[in-house]
Length: 249
Length: 249
Image 1 (cartoon, one colour):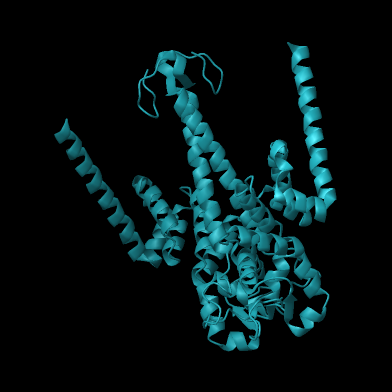
Image 2 (cartoon, chains in turn red, green; image 1 turned 120 degrees about the vertical axis):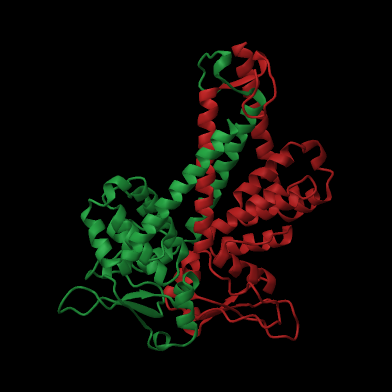
């Protein structure tokens, strides 16, 4: 027989689907692609211009439209220079973050003064954060993903937090696993935590020799205990599965 | 052979794809579905609360967050009552519509007064229009689709215009084809225009007996001329295709 899709000859052993199912699947694929096009157009429509899209630090970025608030990175790391404010709209901040919403609705200091100070963050991370609130887009490296995850957690921006978590999981390896584990613990990043814990407990034989391990025992022994508990849990599960299998056979 | 997908037996004549292509197609489908989930989450994130979502005319709708402009349907059809203003944000209006953008940027009357008057529109259509600018969502019937198409054309909101056009094309039939054709002509709705023209020229034998036809000849004979031109073009094309085919055979 000749495959309708790749046009190659094949024997009965390599047969896949009947013609009807093939045609149905092709139709489904077309439908899904149309849905993707529609959704992409919707995203493009709903996307805002970012107030920080076109400007670099110190350059003359075009003013955004009718901003009614500015954000300032209070720990901006450039000594001697006043921090560069990032202009924004209360309506956008409140729409994307329940924390900003509460802050601005309740006529707190920030709402009255029109200035929101963000502590423990660099100007670049603040800029990327605000950009994301307007556009749902961001360029990540590992440092930026960590910085933004912290901001996303603090201001309860779930969509951004999930995005950073996925990125960090994709970058997870044995070398950064302990650091990632501790970071995920501190910032309530369950996806990263589970992935790191899985990687660590798969390599327990190598664990105790690592410098980071000894540092963690020193600094936060409860986290090390949790690693051992997860390891134990895994062993118990594996044993139960073995028993289950040998009873079945 | 047994189909991997529907599990039914089939013969060589009904064979579709080989196993490898089936597996590839299944993977592609999964990937497309994941992409759709991601895009849906992005839409949900970028979607605004609508300033008109929860309120009905005359009811106490909750105030939207920090509105800096109101829109008024200047031809709101309720005699004796002042028109109900629809609150909104300049930033949102300017982001969705280049016409609002120019209006608000250039400090025209509307920007200074904080009131934008929209003529030739009902309160309900204006409300649905503003709602769409915030959420990219709307409930359509034929009347609303026409009203919103007019607004979308006037304020150059391409995404909404395309949405209304698709809806009107889906509702096209012989009875409304001439009206739709004239409407599409007037409001530059190419998708509706082409679909209506196609339907009309497929039924030329019935055309001249219709009351709407006679009215259109009276009111706007140029539009009728265009129908005949399209019909003629179709005939020439069909004849050329016939000739082409008979030369090939």
